[in-house]
Length: 176
Image 1 (cartoon, one colour):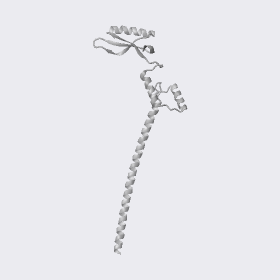
Image 2 (cartoon, rainbow, N blue to C red):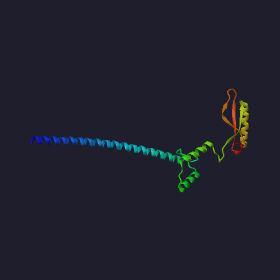
Image 3 (spheres, helix red, strand yellow):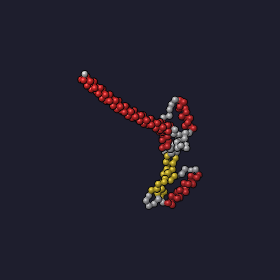
């Protein structure tokens, strides 16, 4: 019977040790699950922030117009732009932000004015301040009369004498 009691105590002690081990393992698993859940939540929040920033950037690009800026610093939409956007939405097509930005950039870079591009018709050089002053007066008079005139390029060339470059611009396609 003493042997039986000892075996019983050994078994009870073994069961307690196993229960403690199971409890510790369960606690460690809960901690690992909590850490993984926290990491997943942070990754989801980061993904949501990135998506929000991307959608905000897309929205900003879509809101670009061809007229002036509003009080928030964004471009105002012109009436024509709003009508085009409305018709595109009604037709089921979307404004492609990349295409809108590309068109805007081309218009800005090429300085399109009413479908015509400005080009240089003639170039003139003046040497010395006396000739430059005389030529400036003549061009101011032509500009006031509405006649074609030369515009002064801001940068001057020449080390000892003043050399100024003047250009006459045109929109006439035949003179390009």
